[in-house]
Image (cartoon, rainbow, N blue to C red; front, side, top):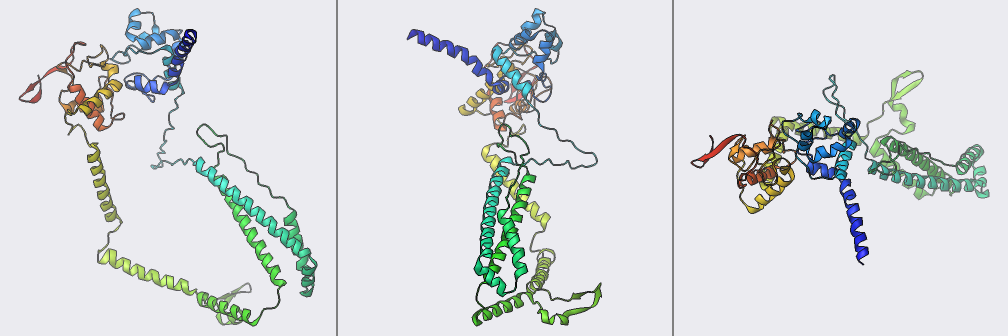
Amino acid sequence: MKTLKAIMVTMLIAIAPQAIAQDGEGLFKSKCSTCHSLKKNSTGPMLQGVKAKWGDAGEGDLLYDWVKNSTQLIAAGNSTMAKSVMNFSPSSMTAQQVTNEEVDAILAYVDNWIPPEPKVNDPNNPDPEVVYVADYEWNLNMFYILCTLMIILLIAIIVISGTVTRMIKSDFFQKKLRERNNTLNTILVVGLFVGLSTSSFALEFNAPGEAEEGQPWLLIENSDLYVLLTINIILVGVLVYIRRMFNTFISMTKAPKTEEAVEEEDVIKKVNQILTDVVPIEEEHTILMDHEYDGIRELDNNLPPWWVWMFYGTIVFAIVYLFHFHILGTGDLQIAEYNKEMKREDAKVKAYLDKMAMNVDETNATMMTEASDIGAGKSIFSQSCATCHNPNGEGISGSGPNLTDKYWIYGYDIKEVFSTVKNGRSGGMPEHKSKLTPIQIQQVASYVLQLPEKDGVAPNGEIIEEDEGEPKNK
């Protein structure tokens, strides 16, 4: 049993550094992001390609010593790379408690990080072109739907065309066609449907590319969907045409119409006449116009009544619109309506910010004394500030000043400390407004101001004393 435990402990010790080393992004954000940026040089230099540079200089192993304690490596004087970057920033690089595997994980993450494509503005076109990226998940679902619909339409076309073909070949239908002297039509229709029934339908679809990680297995572009949609529309047209032909053939086999059927058709014609106001063919000579072109004469057809009444409706609507918005002023025009809507939405935003306490800035920041706020500020300080100022705030030589003594460079007031944390300072203090919310900045500023005094780095700045309850520079 003891042997088994020893083996398990040994395996855990061997695996743990590798597991930790895999989280390069998390390590970078917790240990490096305060001073280093992935996009450009910041308080510290951009880290992409650093490992290759040290390796090319023959100092790949010394890179680990630089990360763990840059001051000690500079003092040793045996690294040319350390000497070349030591003056990059007035602040020295803070010593880091990391393993070689963790350093490799951080640098691998940095080297593999790809910045987003920059937006290129055309000087001749002030409005940059918007690059549209297809929603491949939605496109793939639509692809499935369109392919399913296409298969259903093909099956319906094949079934109906086969039925019509068999019907045409039957002796009964051939007898009916001979009675109607429709031999030519029979030959044409038989050829059409035999061809349809014996044709093979095939659709070849080429995917735009191979799927990448996080994307569907098949990338379907919008143009592919348009092709499939067009094919489906054509198939719907073919299906409608074949069904119409099928109904025509069925009607050819039916008995002559009764008087009731004729009366029903007359009713339909009268309703159609009311809706369309079409002149019967036998009376079209009454609406012929007096001119012609190349033997073609023009009919002066009446407009459909529904269209005429819709046109009259637009006139009534225009009159009402004119009086409502421009003459009586009982309605708001677009600009006025937009301004009112923006005012309402701004009020909602303000109410939300007030509720969430997110409307704090350097003009109205106040000292927070609640234990929960101080605890939150301590947690934020440990994650974002301890790298340069030590966990207790006593500072690190060459990196960050002592935050517990009476010496302050940019002011002791809560508003000034809030501004320093939020916007950063030119002496090496990075900004945190892109990483912390306003309430978090107020919490960490309040935590800093209640830190007990400790011995740390040499004093920097001026002594701040309180005079009649107000902060004052001495």
